[in-house]
Image: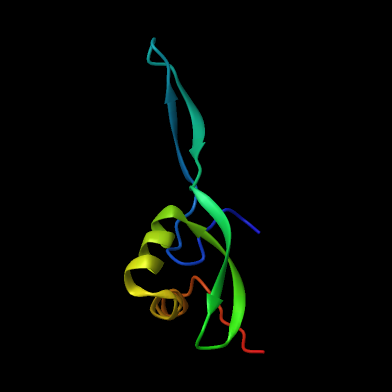
Length: 82
């Protein structure tokens, strides 16, 4: 899988390294991603997500179920029911 947060949709950006002499070379700004397991009480199961630090804060603020619903509505995550 690529480096994309499944909750917020954040992904790597491209920018420039700028040296002291102002010479510019391309570089990537990667996302601060974690592979985390969450217990989802509504489905009574554990799920594993690749989530950024901003996604963790969102889950803490609105709850896992609401964060998964928002991510699914935005198209960042497809929830499969077992």
